[in-house]
Length: 298
Image: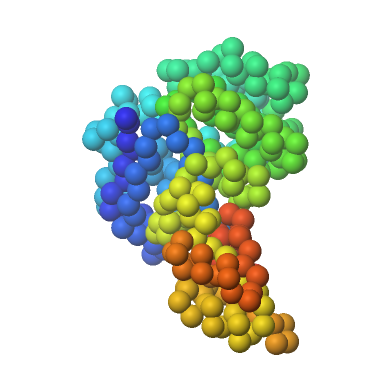
């Protein structure tokens, strides 16, 4: 089984440290979700893992071989980034959709032109091949990145905010296509996204990046099962939460709501307590881990 491994990665832009002593292993055949707040270092991490962004310390290897300036390793990696209506220093992005597809067909040795055509039809973009990028909507730009990522057929495929600008129907369509491809090919996908409501059931594993470090790297269901929202009378909630890790609290008169984390045995003890213990969604778990006291129960 192929393994893409980052070890001791440090990356800074000037005086700003973005990644610090980062350790991560990505194993063949999984769908990973990469989540983190704005500025956590997600895009930089994806660039480092695919050797598109240089780093100051540490190593990135694929099956023990370095990825940097290694054509054999790079042929197995694809990073699909958000497109922009402008090109740095040149004004409007006047490249056409077909230009991006042609470049991808040259760069990726496993490029599947027939699959790319099928995806264009799926997204209703057959008539957009000659459209310049600056003339596309944000959602259509996202569709182009998805087509390139999936049709690359790269064994390790990274998508940076692929659903940005997509409506709920198109997002569901993307995740359906992703799962279909994964089941057929066994490829490894890493998807960075801020929209977690639909993605929670798709990600086999979730990587939580916080302030340049990996905070969590776990099977999604196992991670989510460690959290509860405990509500009830203040004295009851305080008593049952004594043996749990309390990540946030909110008082409503004599009632108290606590977001907690604990072992299976500790959480099982909540079942017979005079409180309500509700499971959390992946999005709520993310807020509890990375909210730092902002935007929710605290």
